[in-house]
Image (cartoon, rainbow, N blue to C red; front, side, top):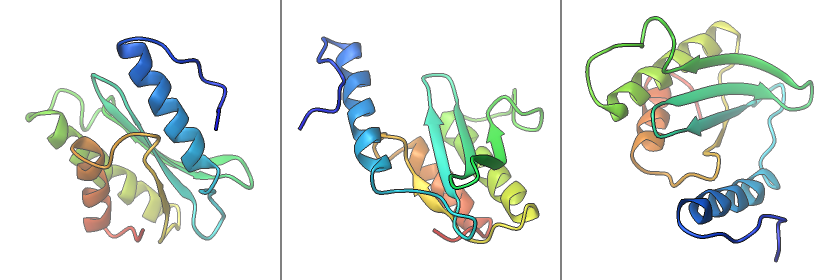
Length: 127
């Protein structure tokens, strides 16, 4: 089953595989007004999360490792991801969102992705 992503070598292969996984996930996951999609974007340096209503095409809440309250904080990247998860959950609740659909963006549910999800759950978002 081809998804239109070329096979490459090394790091490019990993990015292509993540892109294929993300396409496969997005075929099944969509955000609505009642349960928007919590999208996690991970890079080598940081992490970003957005709560998106796919029907309207609007971002309801977002948080990033570049936010003033998180930037330059103590701890490793997993601690940074926990702070981003708590912040995006707080902003989503302020926007009136109680439950979300989790979109891990083709990343493995471990490490920073799991830390962000756990922090968002602890802050009151339902998955």
